[in-house]
Image (cartoon, rainbow, N blue to C red):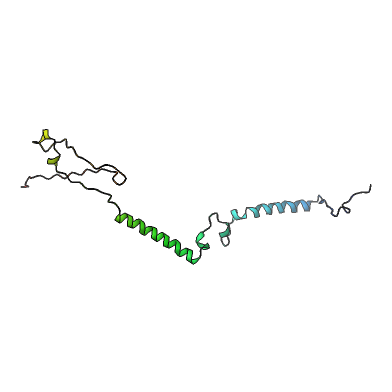
Length: 143
């Protein structure tokens, strides 16, 4: 058999020599490749970073018609929520009672002390809090 040098196969492979210049060149090439890989993290370039952002800004990719439709939808939802807030059910319900009507039959003579039995409206989605506010009115005349 003859010596097979790769000429019969159609290709040949040449092993690099072990010179100091080649080792230095390979080390610098690997060092350069390492820094070029992390170059965008070390010193980011601000003039072409739009394509590398994690969240694309969709407003730049919208046509004028889509841009107008988005703002019309926002204003329509704002108007609808304002209309529901103004024309919707009241959020407060005021009930006025006199203390003389709240007294139990056993305590008709002394109105300055309770206990007062008060009926409150049912709690539901729109009435979730109960506030009791007392206004004291006396017949005393200031001298």
